Length: 159
Ligand code: BEZ
Image (cartoon, rainbow, N blue to C red):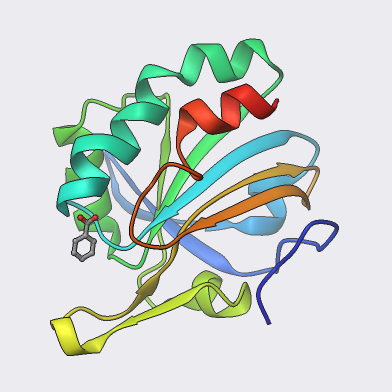
């Protein structure tokens, strides 16, 4: 079942790339005690995600933070090396945490899988956005095909 408003973010471990290599991040720690804007994409370096979705959150990071968002995260079913390289390529700096869900544990636990097997990509994450308050989902959007509902601009207009 897909995660919905009022649900708790499941307890799983994601990974981030650091200067010392991949590091584990528990969702319990990441979401605790703060308002988090998180969005998911089907793949690092893919056209829509690279040209529009991630850049929108980088460009609007300060505006989101001015509306109370304390952390912004991008999650994708990619390994931390790829997510680290994608973040560097997009110049995210410390504006967006690039969370690698390499084994799709977060994606499966939230029911947000997208089966792109026939396109050679395997199981990926749907394009989604959520606002999470102290670990509880306060809004969620899922896009099919486009990215308008899950864009940073839409989130900003709703905060
Ligand atoms: C994209 O443009 O974001 C995309 C393209 C192919 C597969 C997954 C994502």
